[in-house]
Image (cartoon, rainbow, N blue to C red; front, side):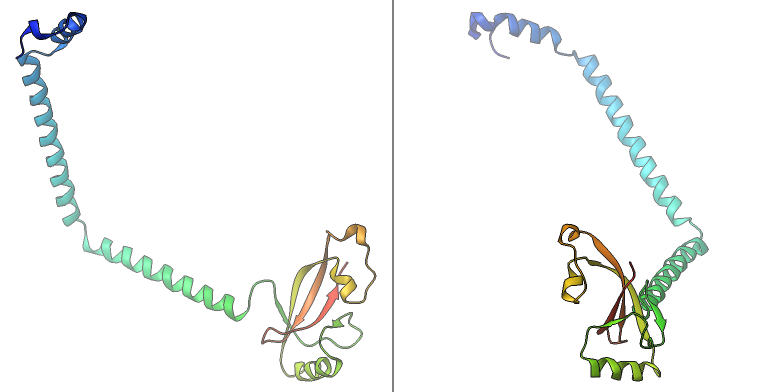
Length: 169
């Protein structure tokens, strides 16, 4: 330990306070004993947890794996169903003329799709279009309401090509 005379006078009071606050040997030994006891308890808990895991019934582990496999299979089937027929679509026969659909493809191609549609289904997809799209379709358009949307249905080929649109409101 250093000599008290080598401490500057302005630090002597702080040194005396620190010396008074320093724990004695009995307090150090008590703290060390408590820390050692806590470490022993933690080791015992870890050992008990490890032995409890090994005594877990085998059927419970199998049940957990089976539940996970069942969930994965259900997710795969749901994904497959959604890919085959996306939500919000309806399969319907091609609409006859006068149904309110506005063709978006050339007239011969639309007629050909309608004729083929009698043998194959087309999709009707509800959607919302920006009101400004009405002008592109040759319909009346109010520029003051350009930011609003319009409810519509799209007629789609099974390959995803948009054939026609019908404005609902």
